Image 1 (spheres, rainbow over the protein chains, first blue to last red):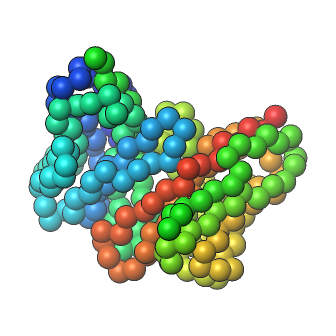
Image 2 (cartoon, rainbow over the protein chains, first blue to last red):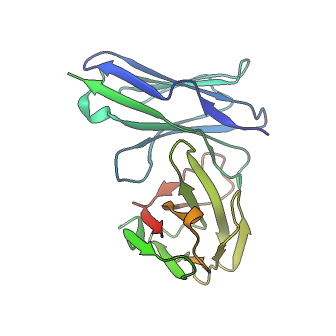
Length: 112
Length: 115
């Protein structure tokens, strides 16, 4: 079946370094991708999104890159901080009423 | 706005008991959905609704019922709880209009344990 998945289950990053979280998707019909951050005991929180007609989008300290050729999505976090420690999920959506399909998540651990 | 609220935060049930997980949003969102989150499996869609009076099944609907009598509320009912339903449940909502970039906002979750 079509799915969204993450390459690395756990990413350990030193404070101040940049983080890169990767995600592979297989549904070529997906036209919208979202990154969520989930802190322990909380619900997923929207970070940044990108439409399929774009290959890069920047937010505050975060950048999402989309490579449709290889169906790959990445989230870059600049100058990672302790507050960035969380599980990060990518999700894909197809169409305006399309349901979100989530990957399994990557645990980011920021070390001092 | 309170956003998406869920009650209770924690619940322990015995096998065979029934209960209702409550979800409400005050953003006038048309689209509401329920997910369950199990370790290592991400979030899986249980049921969703595109407006009052309209519901549909998601990826894992068995053992759950929903109804949408108002725009604000979308309760999830467990008819006869089973240990396999031990999970964290999240409710989410979005505007649901014809916009591809219609982002879903999540509630804080309900942690359910079925003994």
